[in-house]
Image 1: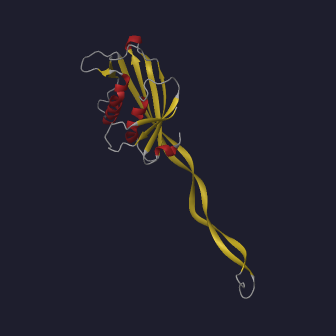
Image 2: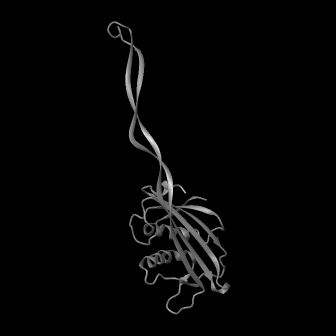
Image 3: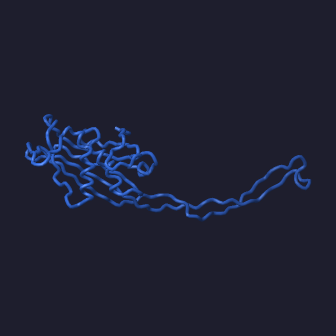
Length: 211
């Protein structure tokens, strides 16, 4: 994934891989989160982001003691990586320049030909490793009518040098369910416009940049 895609001012890009054997009879069925993040405010917030996108599945969250056919779980990850970047060092190389010309109309000091010597400076560059974070979200859905087997699993990743996992999570959650249930094993790029309203959990508009 190109790191610059996540650092532009108007766009944010993720990559998603999904696998599914989604049952035809799933529409309107109930689901329940395996871990609601009780006692952990950060995890509970992530549950909220995923819940906001579950409507794409056609499922309804079970309330209270309602039975649920599907179980929804997720895992997050942060991996520190490095990218080689070429930067100016702040130092310069000085080198001479030479020129040969002709004076007009009578040249310099009566000589129609002249030469000049000057100096020029060029910045020095060096390639240095720059750390960045690769954030990931994996969501899985299990069907209790199929002995608890997985019927959907998708992983979304995004790279950033500036943003934290909580800032990136709304985009990852929206990416996981984009084009639900998706094609098996196909990696696709999802491009967002930044959430100008900065509403927690609100997924910005989604466009597919690459198949």
